[in-house]
Image 1 (tube, rainbow, N blue to C red):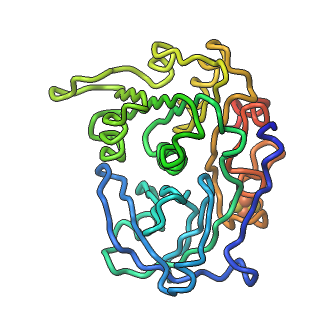
Image 2: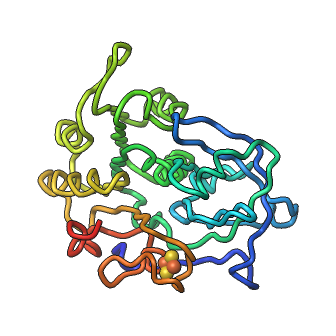
Image 3: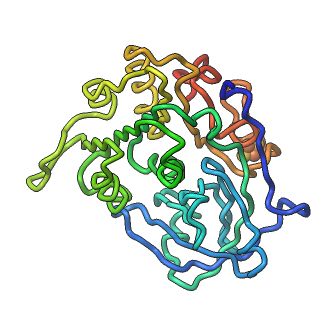
Length: 290
Ligand code: FES
């Protein structure tokens, strides 16, 4: 099965109005970096809390009443259903307002939207995760999903980088994956500091050094556009074909359901056709538009 067979796997939250947000309550806030927070939340409605399902890779529209809404991936794994998580980098009006929220605050949630990572395509394969900065958010949903079903997958390589040690997100996950003997974890920073003893170098160069084998493997890549653009050629050099490379894009999304036309890249809508794509699907316009 090719990944292109797996798009359009959408599951809307309810039969009813997709514009209607469901009320959720913030239960915990983690400061990942000075500009990034992770929010743990649950739905106020107990029935919805029990019945809500999603798949790794899908996203939601999160709203603050009176301010606006913005899309973020669900960064927790569907295999861990005590609560849901999303991570937010402070960047504009809605994200600033989200950063001002405290535990107990109510937000709106619409979703889940979009397609998901193709678990059936990934099963039985060696998986190579390559992430930069907050781009680890959607991948960590899949990484935990895979770890929680460890016997279905072969080797797991994780290569993760950030600008500096302070900018590394999800440090508790990085620690857990370091400890996991079934995972090969490589962490790097663009610029070290006095306390940093690990790798220093950009994610694409470190990927080239780690040199994961392309044999029976799939690489799943997410990070800043420039990182994605330079990582794919490295993976190609290592023997990965465009069908063996997957990414998830976030671009100017607003409505999340293919109505506003804000998220197009080339002739695709990220919200409607993605956000998960194989490199084969997007390589034609990646360099010019993303
Ligand atoms: S976000 Fe509106 S069309 Fe994609």
